[in-house]
Length: 339
Image (cartoon, rainbow, N blue to C red; front, top):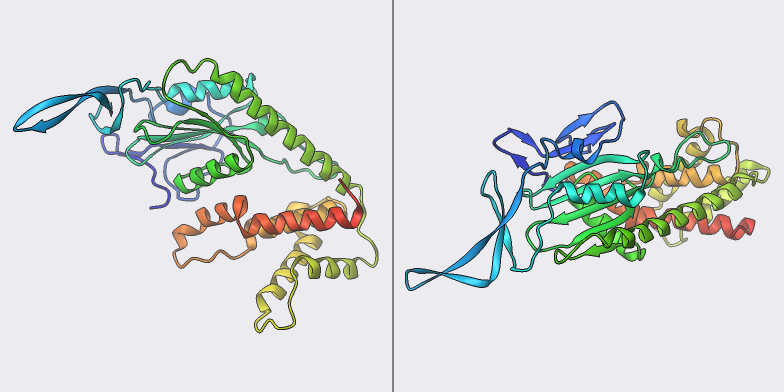
């Protein structure tokens, strides 16, 4: 299953907790009060198990012989073995990465909005909501522009503790994989190996958050410039021309119906989207109409309905949807000479 949320057979529940709204897979607990969680709130009943190390043995001629270079990590409550690790591997308990998230941000305004254990509980993630640290709004647009900082960690030796940004809340394993790839491509991923002291890692991760904040601020400045540019008149002619450039239809294309439909949906969103009520008819409004189409209306190619949310997430951060949004912004910048 693409979600791969760990299941606690003893407690009879999935090991995940989300704030405000459920994950796409519907697994785990949802806190409907929209209040972010403290690290202690997030781990309680989800990942408050202890991880330890035990010696590893080989069976040789009917006798158990200890392998001095290796140990195995395991859950102390269920005795579930996670995987072999080096002897100097340092176990990081599940509360620690979330406490580090809070220290990185250095504020009580931001909080954890998603936390889950994956697989057998050997891999976990926690999501910090940065919009509670910085409420990003644009003139004439009542909506918030969400941004998140994500921590991921492993207990089986296959991955390092990592911190990196995401523009979408991480809910499952596929989304966690995509978040790691996205943050690394952006050069905003900090990895901390499970050896030695992790105290110095907080300052390193703060630099990542600083880069993320500067990136967000730069994006908001650009959107503010677009918000000051009124759509040229006649409006319909400009909208049609812009969408023809954004979604070209080559003369030799035999079945252009999908592209024609896409143009029509974006034009409708520009005119009457419920998410753009009160937003003036500006270049910014067109950018938001394209983003809404790419994130929520653009079709996802899969025959399995359960895979749609995860595939849509991947498309948004590193696929056709991301490319469409980038192309729309590039066209608007070129036409109106915005930098």
